[in-house]
Structures are given as C-alpha cells and as structure tokens.
Amino acid sequence: MSLDIDTSRTAASARPRPTQVRWDDLVALRPRQVVLNLGLSAPWLAGSLWAAQQDLYWLAMPLSAAFFLTALRQAHDSYHASIGVPRRWLDAVLLMLTLGMLCSTHAIRHTHLAHHRNPLGEGDEEGGWARQAGWRALLLGPLFSIRTHAQALRDGSPRTRRWVWAELTLIAAVWLSAIATEQAWLRYHVVAMMGSNALVGFFAVWSVHHGCDAGGVFARTERRAWVNRLTVNLLYHVEHHLYPAVPANHLPMLATRLDAVAPEWTRIRVLERAGQEARVARCA
Image (cartoon, rainbow, N blue to C red; front, side, top):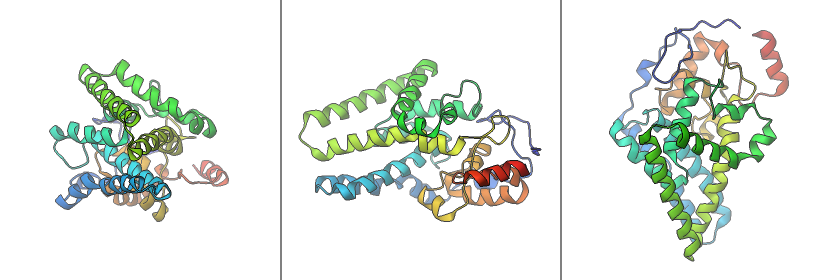
C-alpha cells in the first residue's frame, strides 16, 4: 500500500500521517461544546445510581454501561488535552473520572500516550492487546487493566506515579466503603465498574486495532452513523491516531475529509466482515 504521508513528528506520535488533510481548524471547541464534554457522563451516572437505589438493576445496568462509555470518551479527550479545558484543570477532570470509573485515569493516560507514540510497535503495552485472539482479549480483560496500571507505576514519571498511587488509594477507599456499609447501590457500582474495566481491552483496544499493520494503517475506523452515535465517536480511531489534537466532537468532519483525500487510511472498518476485509487487502 502506498500512502501519501508527512514524516514529521507530532507531539503525540512519531508515526507519519497524510499531508493533504486540513485538521487544525477542528481543534477549537465552542463554549457549548466544552460544557457538553464536561457533563457528558454525569446524567448516566446519576441515573444508574438512582436505579440501583430503587433495586431496578435491569435499568441500572444499561445506564452504568452508558456512563462508562461516555466517561471513557471524556478521559480519552482529557489524555490529549482536547476536552476543552485549560491544561491546569486536566488533573482535576481525570481525578473526578477516576472516582466514577474506579480506575486510575492517570495510569491509563501514561500507557495511552505511550501507545500513540508507537502504535502497535515495541513497548506498546496497550496496543499489544490487539495481537491476541479475540476470545483471549475478552476473557483476560482484568489482566489488561492490571498490566496498564503496572506499566504506569513502572515507567511513569515521578509525578505520574504519585497520581496513580493517590488514585489507587481513593479507589481502595471506595471498595472498602462498599464492603463495610450496607449501601447496596455502592456495592452495585463497584461491581459494575469492575466489569466495565475488564471489557476495556477488548472493546477499546482489540476492536480498533486487531489485524492492523504496525508499519502502515495501524487502526480501524467506522462509518455506520448509528454505531458512531451509540459509541460517542470513539470508533473514529484511525482519525484520532492521525490527528489526536482533534476532539471527539469533530471527528465526523475529520473522517469526511480523510475519506475525500486519503481513503487508503480508512478502508479497514471496525465492524467489517472477514470477507470484506480480504477484498480490501487485495485492493490495497
């Protein structure tokens, strides 16, 4: 496959990217969009906790899933400082997300930015999960979360390690509170978030990178509008890797531009069937 690319480095990635796609006008957010980004997950969290308090677990479960998905988008944009707030506020945003998602978002930021610097390459702990068979990536999900946190504690800067230990302490306090109290809603939330974190490796890494080429197109994307709405734009993944400064709000527009001038980057789809992928490979 021949790709028209720019070999210059960016702050987030050492990999080349297309030169013809205009993206810098998509970085800025309007105030309304910033407010939306900051409050995206709050209604889902409130709804799930209310439903759990009423013992309506059939309702709490999908609401918890929606909370985790929208919080994942908030965290993802925060890792790249594209959520719309000044950088000095990002630690506070990540801390609030840690308390809701019950995972150290500062740890995940470390491994995620390392993943962007060399996607699917040597030392990419996050992207390496995509090399597994799908069933293993799903079944061994809790191990992915443990390895992600361990990498941050092992390789992170002193500041990152301090944040990770502080967040792990807060998470442990929430767990202990759930065990010590008789608040069923809190116990439910802990279990729901443990399950959600165990699925991240499969849904947020394996699904968007499996079968990709570390030396070429290293991520998948999606074009079904209903799927992208349901996943709050998180499946525009090759677009995100090529232009990580663009917030999730504007990835649909970026995808349109990339399709128009560099379609070789967007042929591999997240929900592509095996036969379709084989035809794409023959055409590349």
